[in-house]
Image (cartoon, rainbow, N blue to C red; front, top):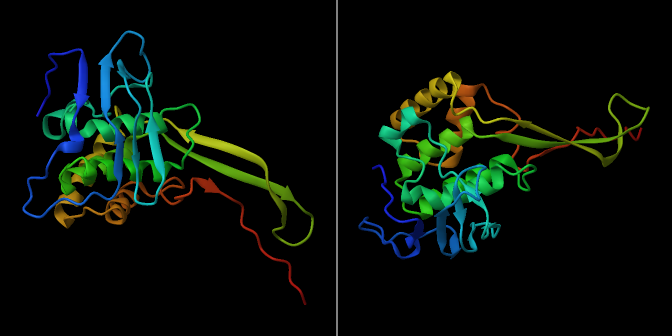
Length: 239
């Protein structure tokens, strides 16, 4: 459903929303504060909506994700061609996940690993009462289309053995790839992901990640939960 705005300030009272399912909904994480957005010319990147109050989410691992007053967002990154069947960028139930995802994925140097950040997005969708299949489809979308990043550690090499690294952390190289939502490649891969998710009834993160890995051919980003790649270390023989 497309959302029409009649007020400048958008407030999401989603914390009090009840599930329509017969069984009580049990969230895996918890929300902190209330999400309030205001459209303002002060925000240009990534979008015109500005966070008005401190708002956050604590996932089931205890990791906190926080956005504060003054942060900017464009809502969910949904291409125009996908909006008729997925929803628009400011669809209310997507906003908690989209705003937090914007803050942690569109900064100059993200502080959490890429896959960890995408999994947070999926968890917040579910805790915002998005249906599991739709949450899986949106999760596939960010796995395929969102900006990607990783930190590659380079150690201090030594001159014995085939592989020998004396110390890690001397050099940390940040690598990234831009988002591809508006490309033909994204549409082709996303269409395949939707079809496979529906065919398999895939809703869990490992299942969706496996589908995306197969479609995209896999990459270092989806295979590295920590977001940090360290060189292999082979211990010296003691004989």
